[in-house]
Length: 167
Image (cartoon, rainbow, N blue to C red; front, side, top):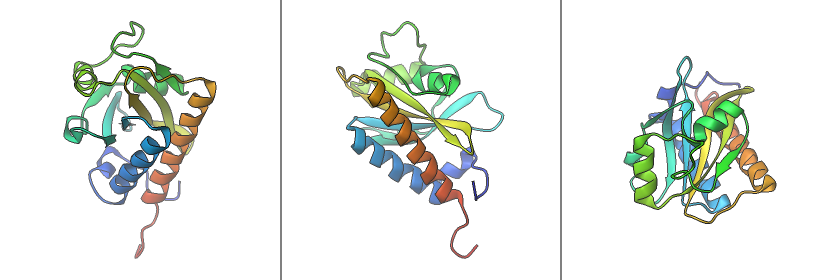
């Protein structure tokens, strides 16, 4: 990466925050899901923090929420280093979820959740979540596609963290 290492605070405002918002909106439209969310794994932390989201509903109920690195599909994508999905996160006994996330999924009618790791400089730094209503399916090609979209988000973040005009 040509710019400074990204930290959680980089998403508070400025070019990284704007790039994350634009990238999540673009990938949400590309896949046609109700919501996308970016969960950042800060250096030295075992927590994933929602730093950006796109979709209808209350953004403030997502941004800043945290997941232990092993929870939800985001945690699983980070742990396994590959795109993963479940047809119903609310009833999948193999994937524990945080109470706040359960409440958000129920409130927004989201059941199907897929996630892919986001790698910067070859290191998994985040998970990109794709959340939708019941019925969506992901086959091998669909999982490959969301993995490529996670790479696109990583590239957008790297560009935004690089030297800015006037640097």
